[in-house]
Image (tube, rainbow, N blue to C red; front, side, top):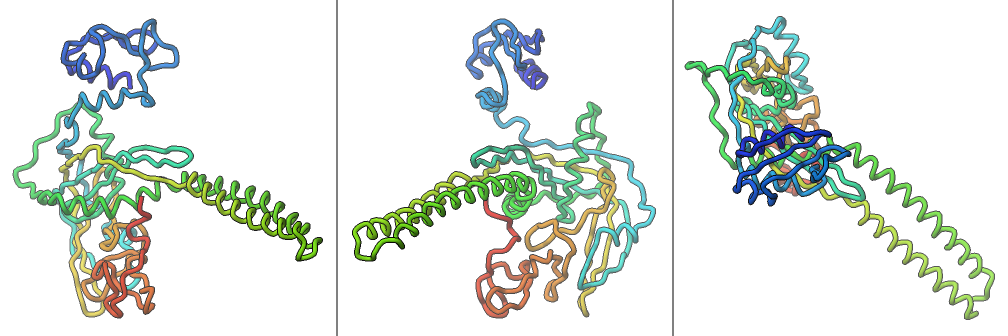
Length: 380
């Protein structure tokens, strides 16, 4: 963080000098003084021990908000071109067989050829708040030529982007896919982000549930003892006795208090998740493009998959119903959509499976509304 702040302030015209321990001495011009609400000469500290007269700067303070206001919209969008070495796969058929797992259809590799594609890597800052808080950054990458969501590309691209080398020029014959319309990108984010948030927050949710169950068990044991004792005293008294009626009222009060405490626990451990778009990287690079013919009964469809040289693997075909990473894939009869098993789940009313990519709202056989499924993930 010290390096980031030093680079940012220097770019804004400040004179920045490192000081020990782990601090900066800054001479700020008037615009920077106004933007950060600081004096002309001030010191910043980033470690446990501060330099003399320094102000502590960290992620738990309001300094990130100040830096965000200073940056404005700069850095929200970046275009880069990468040209890693593109090698012909040694065994394309084996690579395809490893990545394309189909349970109810067959396929045939038609060919492999070099091509260029465009990726969008969308970065989101998420925060999950309950009795504790978890936050982080989640990247969602999409291949605009094939629609695949190759998470490995977002991870591998970072190592290339950290270098200071200039981007290679885009070849004149590079045929890049067009940039998607804004509405299509937003629809992708709405449907693909929740399952990925579920996956990254799974350990946090597991911890919450474990603590919730522990507190529920303690609460039940305490009120159960009170209930048994009140029942024992009531059983020892005749039904018409005023003391018997008091014990019955106590039993009812114990039940109401128990339910109220359970509701308090539910509110205490309820998790609220928010995700905010941070920045987008538009990445152009060469790939090896596989052309595959799918066959389901008498119908056929041509599918294109890219082998990315950064991730060194073939990108999995996207689930066209809910953008889930779950495998294997199933192929529907009507449009030969590739969907995950959840995308071909039975209807809750008639029990017959149907493709959620063909019919997202209602079952095509009985007309019943499509029941909630894991396709969109749990809503934040």
